Length: 454
RNA sequence: GCCGGGGUGGGGUAGUUGGUUAUCCUACGGGACUGUGGAUCCCGCGACUCGGGUUCGAAUCUCGGCCCCGGCCCCA
Image 1 (cartoon, chains in turn blue, brown):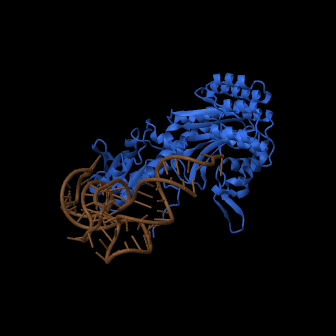
Image 2: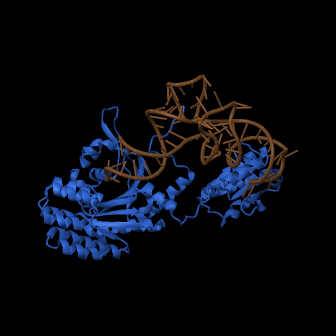
Image 3: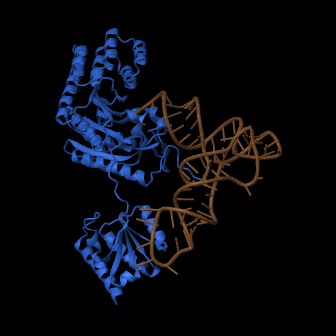
């Protein structure tokens, strides 16, 4: 029987996991440097959590099932809603702002393609109860910080504010439903399609013209002025534009100014209310967006108080792809520092004892478990990338010594059993166990030495 | 859901106008080598994605499924 992994899922092997862990740890450190604390929510939730937010339309892409109790459950397709739920359940009365981050996999039943899988990972955060342009700016600065720390430089951060288009549409007396449809098409960036739907909805030509011009506008900070000329007659759109300008000003104070102002960012969903941003890496191909976020009002939708919330998430898998292609290679940590090789069978137990001492010092140590010949053991140690091999042989052992072989220089030297840890100090990363363990290991080595001296 | 390209040992491949025992490299296991790794030699292991059809005979032709790759749709 040949069982394959489910479509759109992946196995990650050693090298891949090492890279993923590197990316994960890098981001964790930065998120925590900005004061975020990690949370974890269930892998599956009540189905309604996801349908009430986005409507039944998303059902086609949800992994949905009934448990033995007949409950309708769903593997989470994203993490924003679960985090909002967690906030309502647990954190409503905490002092604001609350900063939390998460890392976990999500599931969507979609056609797999480059940059898109059925199980994928998101690493993101939510900032609940912050003030608007400040929180947004800090979050965008943090996102940029992450990318820079990972050594990426071909990313683009596009920032917009939904209040601008909404303001114009309100002014044109466009209904809520029609607005949402229009926003969805703006998000796609299809100008022709937009023209058609504006015609279909019989939108006033004045509003129409402004919109068409507006969504094509993007650039650096000077774009604000151009947009202002276009929409200055509209009070709420102007207010949103001012917010956006303030955001940019703060963002620059936070040290990031490589942004692109983009009026065409709409994020598709109607619960976004203020600033929105998306990050692209064009070299990724069709699925080039690695991150998206903004300010939204989801908590109220779920029955909480009206509290402003800003958040974003990285498409973790896509981020890893970027890092993979990036020329700046991270220093590769050795998977193994030491391999302990008994030269003859009767040295086996001694080899185990020595290995165990090294492990107490957090030295990455492996030892022969299958009783192979020395030649094979060395070959094994070599293919594992071991930096050193400790040869435990009878002749050396008679003198209370072992042979320490440097696999890179091919040199070897006799080292006193009691000096093993000392030998490694300064050569490989070494832990500092507590006093009790130090004493134990030291006694263990002494016993080993005495054992053979007799 | 749609379009296109694919699927031969663990990895990479040759073979595909149908015709012996399916090629080579690598990896892996063992040995030559009883205390010294990446070398060499020998031995071993191991594959035609699955199912139906055509045929005396299918890895090869044909149909369908599954899976992979790229794209469309979608993308909370």
